[in-house]
Image (cartoon, rainbow, N blue to C red; front, side, top):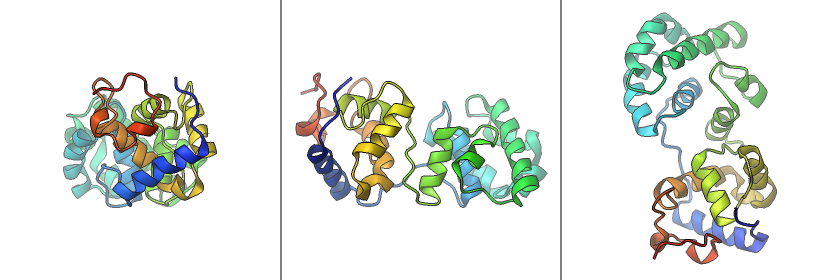
Length: 214
């Protein structure tokens, strides 16, 4: 695990990320807060590409909790059976839809605690929704961010909560809103797990990773 980079270096890193991609976007397709919650919940142990393929048909017929309940668990299952753990995920989608209808008037709540009370929605999912839909500077730490944070020294930590805290504590406020998307995309396409593309990395000279590829 790398040591924590200093403020000036982190500021330069995120200035470069911003210059290269001023408005980074998550890659899960959605049309409203509800479909975003469902898409992120379905993305656990699955790729965004795979989730998008499954949800295009699902969201075309069920883009509200009420419509999802009308579709039913078997209907949801038919749409998402290409996704890992699809049966359990279908159950959770129906359960969270029912809770949204019965307790929140069919609306997705905008607090982390309320979101985390929904079946299949953990802290990471809640933070994605808070960030992408309500544009709150919430940090959803996935495997990509955990790897990038620890390799580079941007936000090192022994677990996801520690990395989340390091992002909040050390990344300048003006970059907080988009920080997790910049880090996810960097980890997904450049700072890959097995063969990082260090020769194409825009922060190579600022990164602490010792085993840089030529």
